[in-house]
Every structure is written in C-alpha cells, then in structure tokens.
Length: 341
Ligand SMILES: [Zn+2]
Picture 1 (tube, rainbow, N blue to C red):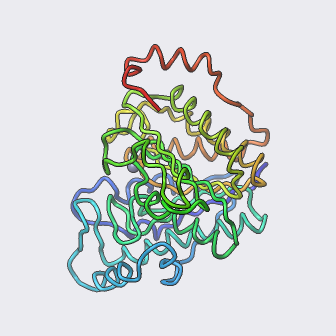
Picture 2 (cartoon, rainbow, N blue to C red):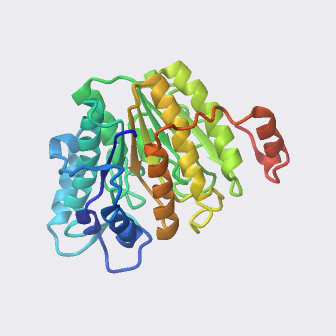
C-alpha cells in the first residue's frame, strides 16, 4: 500500500462568518468526522503548523500581509469582496492551511510519504500576490510551490488545477517563470472570468501556463480525454520534479455552482492517471491541496474516491483515453461546434 499523509484539523472549521456563504465549515465537517472514525487507517494523519510571515511572503506582498494583520485585530468583519471575509480566527486558520501543505511537502520530499492530501480551508487558488478574492486569503498551492523551490531547491513543479474556476491567482504568481508550470481546466464564463487559452505566460514563463476552458455539459469522457492528452505531453516534455494538484470538487455533477457533469468516480480516475505520471517523472511525489466543492455530500464522496485511488496497492495504468473513442464523443457532443482547444 502506498504511504498517504492527510492533513485535516478541527481548527480549519474556525474560519466562519454568520451570514450565509457557500464556503463554510459545514463543507468539511462530516468528511473530517468520517476520516477520524476511519478504522483501517489507510493513511497517516499529519499535524499541521502555521506558516510564518516570512513563508507567506514567498508568494504574497508584505503590504498585503500587513493589511491582513491590521484588519484581523479589528472587531468588525472585513471583506475583500462579496465572498472573501476576514474574521477573528481567519488569519491563523489561513496560516494553518498553508502550513499544513508545507508539512506534507516536507514528508514527501523526505520519502516518508508517497502522496499527500491537504484537506484545508480556506481555499487558495484565487488569491493573488497582492489580494484575497473568491473565498481565498492565502494561495496555499502557490505557497507550497514556492516552498518547494526555496526550501527544497526544485525548479520544475507542475500544478494541475481541476477546480471548476480558473486558477487566476496561481497563474498570476507564476506567469513569468518556467520553474512552475500551471495548467488549469475550468468552465468558461464563470468567476473569475479569466483563463483563456491565449493566456500562456510571459518572459521566461512563456508557454508555461496552460488554460483549458471547457463548456458546461462536459463530463468524465471529455475531461479524461483532454487532461490525458495534455498531461501526457506536459509530463514527457517538462519532466516535473513534483506534481501539485489544486483539487477543487465543484465540477461535480451535483455541485450547483457549475454546469459540468463529473462523477464521483472521475476523481479516482484522474488520481490513477496522476499517480502514473508521478511514478514516471518524479518518484511518486504527488500532493493534493483542496480548493472548492460546495455540495458537502459530493465533496465528501469525491475526496474519499480520491483517497481510495491513492492507497490502492496496484493502481491501474489507464493510459490515454483512446483517441478514436474520445474524438467520437467530442464530435457527437452538442457543444462540439463551440469547442476549440
Ligand atoms: Zn471553485
């Protein structure tokens, strides 16, 4: 059985606001309980720590960090936008989210774990270097990539983001470097309304940003085909030293925030594909960081499907989704005439 480390902690429930928000502690409450009760202990539970201000500054401007610190001591909630709030416990919770990812990254680099899954909140992939947005305060995955660059000396890190929303913050932070390749698959026309195929990076990072906008109504076969095709080329040519995954579960068919149709089982399938790539390119180093997912039941089942796929002894090697079959699916798809990669 592979060695899987999970980070989850009841302190991640402390970031909360009294008014209704789809990003709330109830997203993960039942999932945490289920993992705590897990009898067969197929994973190792890893204790998180808070990221320091120096570590947060690896991806965020000192001005932004200072601004957060000032607002955190004020009695009233502070909102960056309609979705992104900052309450009394938000700052330590956000630090704990980033720090939890670092703990897993360290253990994977030390060979103590094969895979990691940071079941943290608040999510991070919309946060840019200078501001929070879209439920995100610190960009957990970007900070983890920076941590791997600076603390572990890596220079080719692949970030795959399959959350239904574009990874605008992660893209912005790494837009002009080739040391982190950011690949985002997301639904067209949703918040934050960026992530066009033409956005491919700049300067030394030209070609190291890949955006795959998809139409609503896309489901398992289309996703598997597109990601299979893109990842095969990326992994062969880029040879990542570490694969990070911004794992959002809001493209699930039962998540009302999106129109896409991914099944619970798809999250297991993509995990098998990513395990194969991690085995081929980077000694199994694979770390998932949770992003969105707003139907708690779908989120819980999809996370468990992912964990199952991570711990199965003999993972299947599904290879590329057969092109002939996929072409047929895409051609026969009602949205095909709009489709262009
Ligand atoms: Zn999302």
